[in-house]
Image 1 (cartoon, rainbow, N blue to C red):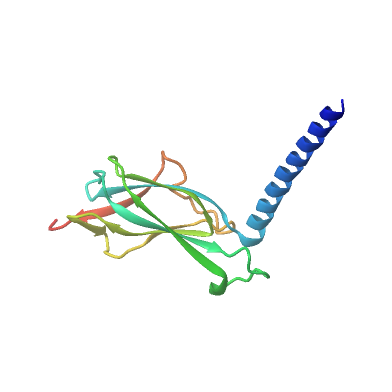
Image 2: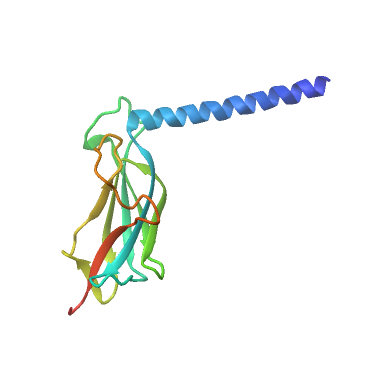
Length: 153
């Protein structure tokens, strides 16, 4: 009976620790505006054909949760990059990130250039209060489409 009480107490502490960790994560998300980002994209040529092997950078903007008080402005922003390569269907996925903004940039593939303009950045705002505009890229069935043009085309 005594051992059973000890295990119940240990189990209670573990549940309490999990609940507190979850509440802390939600609190940080609330005060910073950083939210989990899961984003899908597809790179195609100007005819809509997927391009495999495109390298790109996914740059996530994060509000620093450890800078108290939280201020709006450039002085409390952090930037994290994920470098990705498209699969055979031209698809890529950004996952495991949290932040307020995502930019897809620096698309590169031999024989292609970004279209309509080289150096253009594609992006998505994940700020909680950024408006009600329809968003693409939030599901694999509705990815954001990024175009590249074949050199010489």
